[in-house]
Length: 204
Image 1: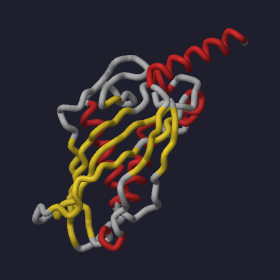
Image 2 (image 1 turned 90 degrees about the vertical axis):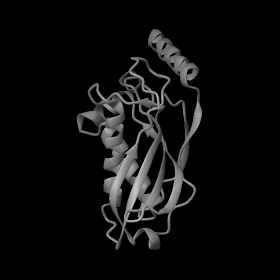
Image 3 (image 1 turned 120 degrees about the vertical axis):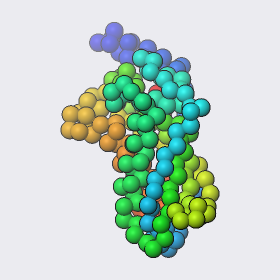
């Protein structure tokens, strides 16, 4: 038992050194007025993943990269992450059926989900660290209706036995992140509850 606790404590110390305890948040400057957004129909969702963003496939707990996504099979991580954003945004905007068609343009800044090595650790300290910008343009004229707005969409990540249980009932990282993004987009558009919050975790 002592040995097990010592190993557990050592792993936690390694996590602190690797990632550092930090503050995370879901945040944006202000929600858009519902009276405005309900006049829109989102006809196009563009997700831009800049080529300058780095991608890591390193089999380590806390890789240094802008994009870390491991739950789907190896492939084009930029395309996989773009689909996650598009799905969350489509779900959030499905209820908008106003007379003005608009384009939602999303530009990724950071998408750092847990590696499977980190998810397997027996701690409740993980974070999916997500940052992007979003802007709204008139779909007909291209006029900018809402300038590019930074949105932080960090969320606590499930780890250890809780993650294994969640995955066994279909609550994968992807499902959790899509739901979170749906909530964040709806809150920012003023058509859902305000999801803004801050929290402190090690953040692997």
